[in-house]
Length: 364
Ligand SMILES: *Cc1c(COP(=O)(O)O)cnc(C)c1O
Image (cartoon, rainbow, N blue to C red; front, top):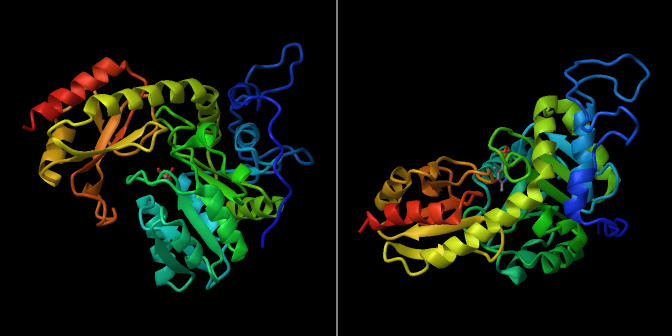
């Protein structure tokens, strides 16, 4: 069973850590932020050797996210995208090892798993992540339990503490994609998970202007392996994007507070709308999935007829976006044709509700 030291509770609140970490020391004349170092190399014998090995902006971002997730010092590794972070984590699975994963996962995750399974690199067992006993049973002989919670876009919840205990009892590592919840709403390492993965493209950056990923590992041996993978494969973020991701992270708490309040109010106002079969909301976070009556056609019509809500993929930005997920061929066939995923932003909720309701009313 993988073991690591218990993670210490941070002394400062996450809202404070997000603002104060990853900055130059408070010395006269010091800049407030770590500047963007656009350099491919460094003068020899210093902290950084080459642009693919390290950058001060990576370090500042990594220090902040590691603390927010409750990981040890220097336990975060930033990547060029969420997908690169996922690939590096799957590289921790030995050849022929089995990964247990939810059938409703981010489509890119399923594609990576299927691709590796097809080439014989690893085996995959898909599960219903809400069925804790079945997931734990599937972990027998597995190398890793991978999951998201809430799942994308079904918004199912996993019982994280129980799954960690069950997977570890079978000797499987536990990796959690925490993109939807963010470390402000859920810290899987504190539940005993081994690895936390982010698409920093989403809430962490928060302004739809960055593509980036990150992993936080409880065990420094994994951090070392992930760093080696990043260096060897070159799956590195740019200095500018890392700077922007940290800048976004500074305001995560206030963005998420507003977006979550908006989401909760929208769920109330959408409930029982005759054009909707279902409103799915896990009770926290700012993603809501609605199922439009009549399937694909009216759902596409809805996405095309909002004015404020932008019809676009991705999520977690300050602006509200929506999309019908089954428009992607890779989306699971068990996701309803009429499911439209809403990424609720920080605009005034009355404006968001009015725009969505006029588009829904027009479907009748
Ligand atoms: C977007 C997303 C990813 C992939 O991240 P990229 O930054 O687009 O590579 C992984 N997991 C979840 C839950 C996502 O929403």
